Length: 275
Image (tube, rainbow, N blue to C red; front, side, top):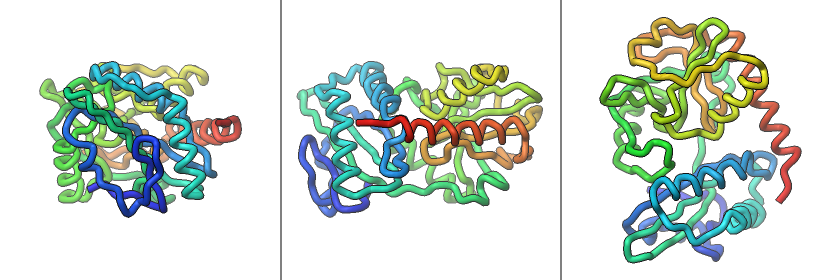
């Protein structure tokens, strides 16, 4: 069940009390969504999230009758009216064959890794699963429930999906990267959601001259890698101490450099942001 924090959420064009949030009113149909991070009252990488929203809609053949400007105004309204300093905002767009469409945005519960998680890493497991049309960020509650159940049962921080051909693809809420010597590897774009943080890592690698390969990685291959990390809106760059039975170096220098560089990118985006 979805929950809204603070005082207000947006439904279509109107502000409503968070006590009245009921995602069931969206009805059945196709749904796409985004989750963005707010720091210092500023939405981080907002334009990138908006661009991916419209990309997901196109991939799913969902006709969208709202604009990027409308989404920006909704996010601005939520932040200002809720006096929001930090946290996550989720916005969803539903459409069905009867041409019924709805937009909703709210401040969602969030859990950011603690300092100790960044210091010692987190434990990750794998599970057999894959998303159809993985480049689109769409609502898949059944898969979400499966992943959450395994995370809770095994005490994992995250689970990484393994597709029917045995390739690692993506985490349930993240992308995954590996370090091998001076190289960085990550599952190829055709297999994963193009995460905003993932894209920033590719950008940083290109700027720093770090060899980065998007490739297909078998579940058995992590045995040869030096380090592993997850990327995501809430996790940023999060070291992995263990994936299934493989132990990684959580103090890997290349990974730690990328962690610092990404934090600097966020600071710069916040500094340059304007509505």
